[in-house]
Image (cartoon, rainbow, N blue to C red):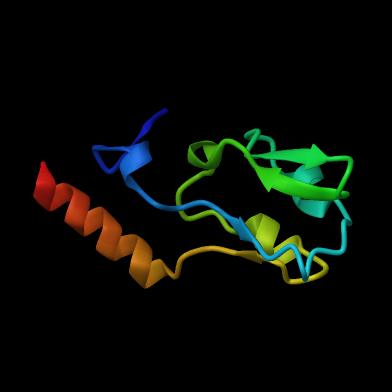
Length: 90
């Protein structure tokens, strides 16, 4: 996995979620992400998030590239709350 702010990565809920109704199958997210977060489902012609904790904490570039605006991330506020909570639990 990894560590972010001295917290195990799997304790930080930062990864994309996909609204499949909005996904247009453009593959921008899949082609962009070099961390292996996505795999492409040929049957549905849509991405699936298969390795969410490979996502770089704070990165939302794939969502910015998404032609259908189908990719969402937690807000930066939610991210900071999760980090603070995880630090308190240490």
